[in-house]
Image (cartoon, rainbow, N blue to C red):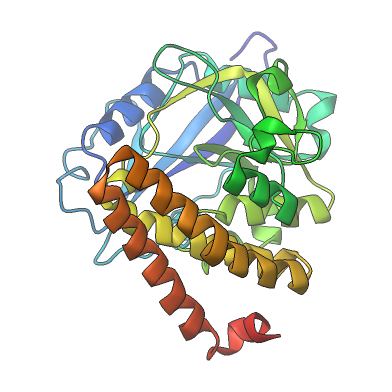
Length: 325
């Protein structure tokens, strides 16, 4: 029992792995070491998306009930999250990146918060993401709009944040816990009834933006996202995506465009495509050239070439008929 003599709340954990090496084991060990007196951990489901580095082998960690799913191919992050969630039955689902480590008291802090009156209409809870030195890293964001994306493309957000708000909230904006548009998917705790209500993540998002889309749909259904500053989680960042930078950037561009057509006025979504190709692409090439990075130029060419092919393919598919409207 915890200090309030109440039985702990229970969260099942879903981790999607793709070639993360020892990071996954470190993540699991951090869960096993965490204070689970207020928020207990039920089953930990690891969904391996066809890793080839052996990172899904030898995962038995004392103190954890582990279930491992091995996919024969990479099904994408959203689909794999849904696959893992289907094996869970706890009241809460914690989607955790394999390159994270939860601090010893992080789960306790989340459990304490979930018992408060403030948490009654909170459907999604995130943590303070920190780097190796314990400094606050990107932890939560604004819902992307065309203005927000242009600020990211051009850097105008740094020059005129009032006119062009940045996508990610700055550390001074999250000095304390607060409701936010969306929390970062590295630590993404969801009420399971909400997950069922929204039918999980939209698996058309292969990688990136699936948690943004989910948070927006939750908000429209009356559920808030909440940044919990007292729960600390280390995130290494880009451990998987750095192994395939060109493909990772392509997935980012495709998912961003899909999100725009699902949630923006179609005029803005079409303008996003034009800006992506006519403004963002030349900017990336120029910056890579200034840095003298031939590999970055090649990765950029691969990414944008794949993005154009995706646009052409989606024009012929019923699901994305909106792309030609």
